[in-house]
Image: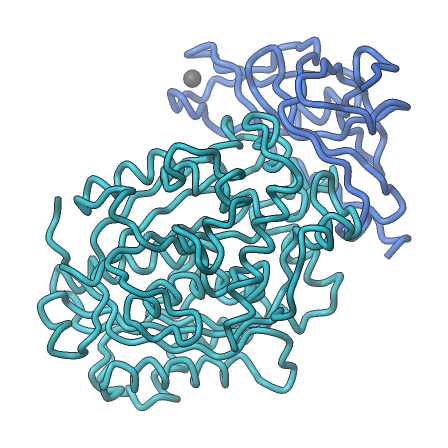
Length: 140
Length: 391
Ligand SMILES: [Zn+2]
């Protein structure tokens, strides 16, 4: 299992812009050209007004941790050699949420409410947005 | 308040665990046979068969879709429809609601609902990977290593943060379930468990340890739903469906904006109102678990803890045998075993069994009303069903 590749995203034509931006080390959030609302995850139509005029808005990629866990055992195929790894639900300052990994030296200390900012991690032929704690070395 | 329109009139179940020599179709046939005999029916009294979606074997699931059970159980040229129902772990509640609608509208007379699966006999990594794709987005969450234990872990993290629930209280819920399972001959795990043993087990995904996590199991269960006006003529112990409430709160875990509550408060309010039955009228709670946090969230949302926090209520022994609110008396997925969708079906069948007075050593006395909960995928929805001996 250790050598199995981790699963990678297979972008749809409407999400390709998100992954293309990540490949260029830019973080973007989809927004609706009709009702101006931010949308996560990228959608084919706006889930608020069903509009089809969807654009990409540059995002600072900052927010806070809503929920977090450190995976220590029993991972899915492709993650055995990444243990321990930190999974978090992040609430961006735009108000939308997404899942990502918390990476960096202090990742195992991540707690609810901690401020995080986006970074980028190559995975196969893709680049995944990941997050780092903004302040390192915070004691318990 | 609505008058009951449907009732459960027969139940069947085979033991949960690892039974590599027992095929899914054999387990399904035996569970259906028991349910039909329990209702005092003949197979030809069944006009609609509802098999639940099975996950371990596509071939078996195709057999379920294409009426194999009608052929195996002598329903050819009498059954009118065989239709698969599938909303993951929520299927107990959703199929009961659909069966209720069919009998209430006259589209069906007697509906046979059945689940069988053999996820316990899958190789361990295949089981982990299967449940890393049930409600886990392939594009947005799987690439980060999301999986079913992580769903339980993230919800536990948020719930404990918001409510102050402790590790000991979470462990106490596992112990409560095990005490019930000790009395259940169909349960996978029947040896006594202590809070210390839970807290000493290996950390899997913080704050979840190995004994906070369910174990996949093979199993099957069935029940028959009839029109309320027929029920008392069919059996001496019908269980009436009094009210159902539900709410979908996400597909992907990350899109739930209230992981510490999910949709249980809204679902419970709907169900209580429809039933004309409130928390004070409930004597037994058959709550979907899989991880301790989800039974805690349901206890809170259902307002069954007399104003206390669910964690404190459970730690005081109120949900265990002898407590004031017996909860998930088959041992739940944490002790009876997680048979995929069947984990929830087993909890619903246990609610029927208790209200029918057929629960043997774990029978809770003097029952009138029960509440059952269910949820599918990564707890994408919250279902609450009120059941009663009275219509
Ligand atoms: Zn819009």
